[in-house]
Length: 297
Image 1 (tube, rainbow, N blue to C red):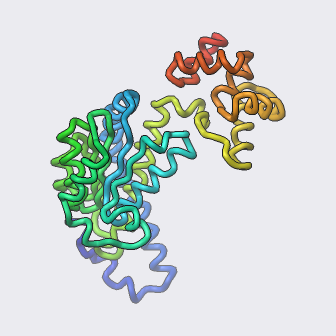
Image 2: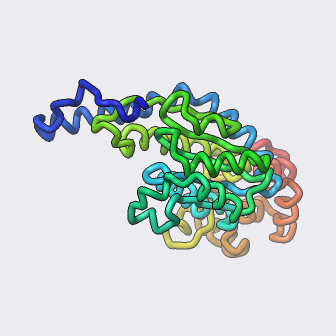
Image 3: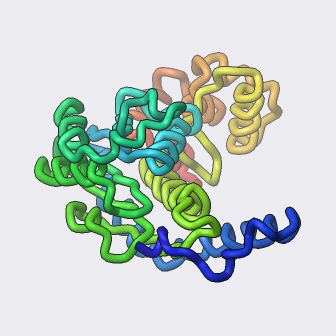
């Protein structure tokens, strides 16, 4: 596996100065980002397949072990606060359980049956989107999870950093970010991990945009649950409606802090009419604004 190979470039790393080490590691991070470019088409195809399944009520499922599993949890955990994605439509299958987020459970990743059982316990079905992440692409737990999910007809996506990875054989979509050998051989929390995070950032963000949870580059489905988010919500409503932030705050109060509803109230609708309009358009704010104002965003 290329992610496990020793790179001649770094064999004397331990004899370098801190500045030389950091510069070398920085180069590796840039290379990790560049490695994702070749996967952009595969990411787009996965998004286009995932969105219809999620529109039918499916869930986003992350499966992985060690660093890869933690990166998956990090990506998914940000979806509710950023896009108000329902927490009950997120599943995290971490080898060794969620306790392994803080305490390594190295042997847990070797159990393929445990990965399959995690999917059975979650009652994975054809509308679910299951993302398996493994730098090596050989992790039995993650292979078991994707194999079992594929058998149910779920949209399955494999993210790995080695070409020809066994994980690709059990998934519908194959996303390869070929990062090669690490600065420290086998330490895939470095280049491979960075590339995985970029892939998941691109995938989940594109899915949320396609699901109508972003309008004009703004997080219109976020929920204002603290002072910072309240200020952000007011700024979003003000920007889109074209009103002072004081008026935006009033619209948000009338809308019970729902940003999309507040925007439509700002355009002259009652709360009830705004809610019905959004429901009619499946929550798509651009379509709702077009119907209510005649303007195409």
